[in-house]
Image 1: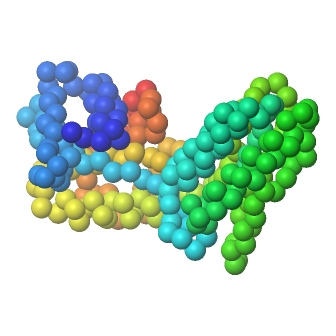
Image 2 (image 1 turned 60 degrees about the horizontal axis):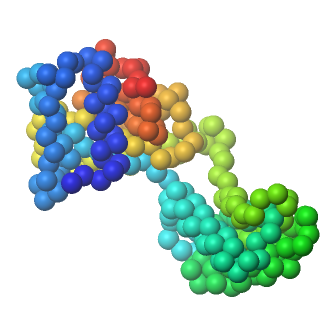
Image 3 (image 1 turned 135 degrees about the vertical axis):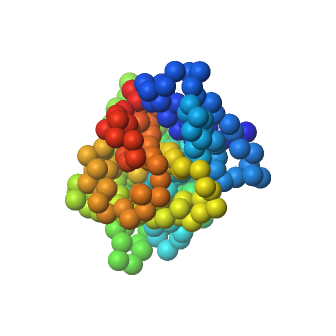
Length: 260
């Protein structure tokens, strides 16, 4: 059974292909995990393609620890804040609207989460009767040559009994984002070229975009900088659940087409 991200990419590409082929002309064959690569074989008429799925993401250095994907960091912190809300609600001390913010990820978060949670709950308990209260930094960690790592909380209203999470927020200048995107694409495609080196069928790469900073125009700017594009028949990018586009294809009628 394939992973959810693999099935998402397959579905998006299948939707795209239906603009060129009748359903009777298309046939997917799932490859068992022990027989990979590729992830799938695809028949389009009489032509057989090897289809590989990969994810494009950037990892963030958290203090002195290992780099982690943006989505993983955000999920860890979001789950933590939801647990704080659940605990405060169970205690009966959640009265009002609270914002918990992490401007940057916190190094070795597992080691300090208990301390941070205790301080957040103390703030919630002490401000329950107030309509609003000033922002308080409940944790601050210093990592050399990096922005201080903080956890902040503020009571911002008294209408809903909830605790919501804010941050970390990542942003890049367009030029920096494009340079980083091209580097990630080169690395990802080179890795797949090596992985598929024994596959003789024309290769299609389905790329799930979790980079967060790129649009189709940025991808197109990278085309001249990707040395291994010619090793693939087609590279198709999936952005979210409803959009995909052809980044590169040896079929000119597929280029600049989208699945919507």
